[in-house]
Length: 116
Image (tube, rainbow, N blue to C red; front, side):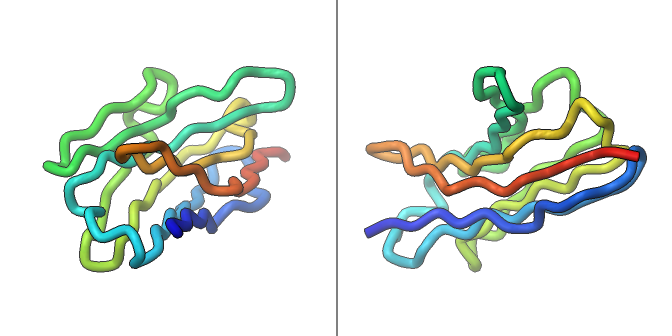
């Protein structure tokens, strides 16, 4: 059974930083060939893609986070991280990690709150 676990959320002031981690269980043996994405969902809104990284390291970002967020991966650890800098109140949401494989695997999410 494949498990996806997010961590690193919290409460920060505007302008602050957080680093989210997404850990995929070792039972998924093809991590280095998978695309992994970070999504977020704010209350009352639809889930949106924030950033995605392919097996080759190609990245894409939603326009609103370009220049502030960085996604990277560590295949040796089955991990993808999302470094979030210069956070804004509109970044407040639950952040989810998605493993794109033969089927999609989702984590339970980690809450990010940006408030003064």
